[in-house]
Length: 208
Image 1 (cartoon, rainbow, N blue to C red):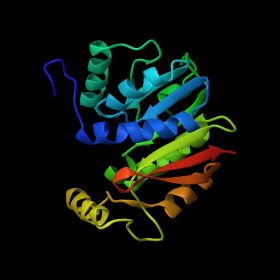
Image 2 (image 1 turned 90 degrees about the vertical axis):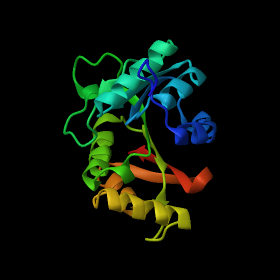
Image 3 (image 1 turned 180 degrees about the horizontal axis):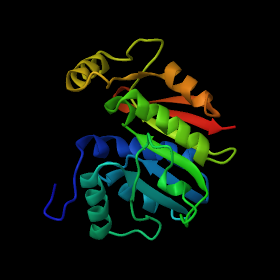
Image 4 (image 1 turned 90 degrees about the horizontal axis):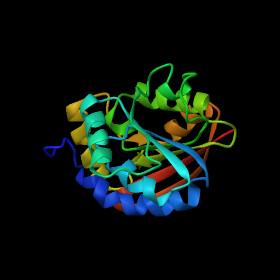
């Protein structure tokens, strides 16, 4: 963290350009993008100016991350980058669902590197919230490592999961079939699985 409270995540700088290339394909021309678990705020700060017709709504659960997001915005503001919201993905109501939220409706949800470093209840909450918040045709873009048919896609991901489980037995790399089933139960169809650098994927879900 810098003196101005900006935080830095090395993985963000490594993956952001590859993600941006896919966002140019999948993001709508107008509307509001809700980023769940914005972390340091580097993704939102990097992506927002590339989509000047969209509003980018960062959010996070952790107070230090919220401070970092605000610090990045103070460091360099973008006209379409909104102030961060405190948001618990597992909660039964999100801040964007409140009647006084002025930037709805939400057309797209973007979430990177969250569901493997949180309990499964958070992944379930993400899908429940996406089912509530997204309008018909809206999309959830989910980035991170995934298993396929119970198998890791690279030895490094298996090592990563071992490390995660040592930190918390409720963490772990999720199987895309389990994630897709949870999505389906909340009205979201898994439409695409895009391989990304460093053994990650961008998973695309569409609200029915």
